[in-house]
Image (cartoon, rainbow, N blue to C red; front, top):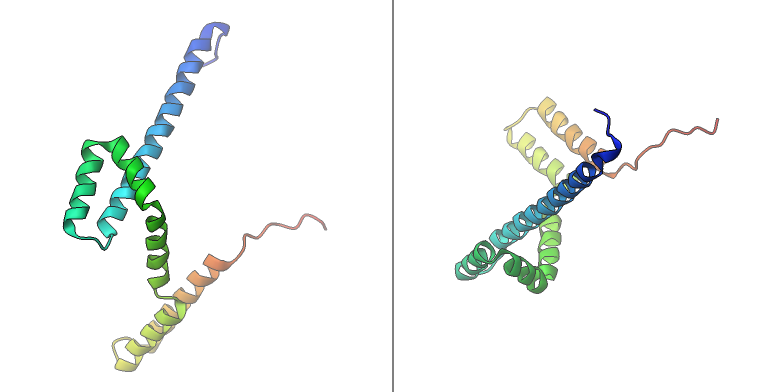
Length: 134
């Protein structure tokens, strides 16, 4: 479909709709992020319920006030969750305990160990660019 000279308003409408879709998408992402943080918080049930009701019935004010008052706490809680995840050494040690207890066989242990090491290698490996300076 070719655009004619008089299709200016159509193009502007498409740009406007695309902008609205992006804004709505970001808004939904923020709401899901905040609701997820409310659920994961170590606060009493009444505080969680209050924030949830506030976010549902007053979404704009609720979201902005939550980000203003709890934004730094969201970052700290995310860092704490990431630090609490078992590292590769912990995962290999757990697999070794399973091997020693007889729950898994030696080939299964090797597969688990290889998977952990490969996942860690791919996570830390810098992006490789082809060298065109030959």
